[in-house]
Length: 487
Ligand SMILES: *Cc1c(COP(=O)(O)O)cnc(C)c1O
Image 1 (cartoon, rainbow, N blue to C red):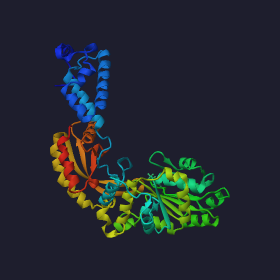
Image 2: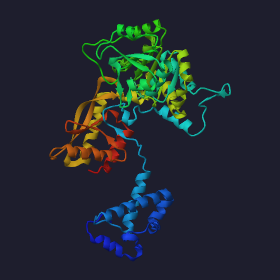
Image 3: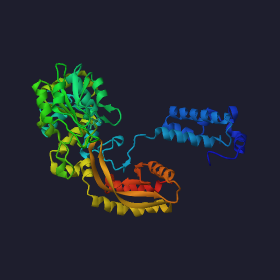
């Protein structure tokens, strides 16, 4: 039975049904509605309160539409019950769901960045179910430090004396600045006053951390003498920010880590580096562009380095700080650390991810981020050739499917200028004048699938970069759900 009827007589028809026991204005009463068999069952399955709230909301909406003079609205018991059931279903549907990331951006901040390794997922599930020794030292039978579960491994992998973990790298930078330079000045090159993904802006983080930003140099060129002139008794630390998501090209100059570290140490100041992506291994060894590693930065004289857990490292969302033991001890004593700490589930995932680095040979196989970043184009091409005919079949004549080379990116500000050669399925709507609307509808249909498929609209086509569609399970699931596509 259709829920909306265009025949204005339908309201009157429904009203005549004697069993409806109509309330005010021809609408069934709430009480009567809740006693229909369908909604009685629904209350048992979904909870009485939820059904009651959605029924009230539906009735309120109905009254409003009727009083606005809208005609052709079905008010029969069955129609109403069906609409209420749909509302309850929508309320119970998880809004946070797995999606297919075919955008071509591998570490996509809006899509949760790094996919986790199986080892990390298992470790999370194990500690999630019950109690775990998060802050309990099992050897000594005493209270422990939650960082103990990852600190050793962070030190092994970076060469740092000590390390600590907080909620994300933004939190790490905030905590670092507040610990080292509260009520003090921090000189930063004008070329590094970055904004990352909306709300993370260095000048604002500085202010919130209680520091006074001293801008030095210019956008394209900053020299050591600019820093030398800016250092005074009011300085709290020197800082370098990795310009993750852009590059300054042409007539440029920046001060090296070595020079900044030397200058800081001459004045008895700590030198901190916000590294952002935080590679733990040499990406060049995997055929990717080189990205400065945490250990390289420490070896160049940085006292503290901060980086993300869910960028190139390939772990859960976390902010990691590695460096000098005395400074890490100070950070751990800052009350802000307590407010920014991570939970046991994150800690478990991070601990398991770090342990995978013990065997660099198997890292590519086990760590999805590295596996996806290094996936051979020939393999993606072969997948495209397998999938394209099946997709064309589903889409019919209205949309032409084309296999096309494309470039993706690592994302999350990692290696911003490097693009990853990949292969995409380009979907071209046919016979649609000004295909903008048709493209948007096509993209919406893919987003409406049980596991939404997200692509990228460029050059008058909807592009699905297949780099992140894994062979086997994912590929099969992707194809299987195409039967649900409603164009
Ligand atoms: C990504 C990034 C941040 C923010 O890290 P989150 O983990 O997103 O909080 C800060 N600084 C730099 C240089 C970055 O690249």
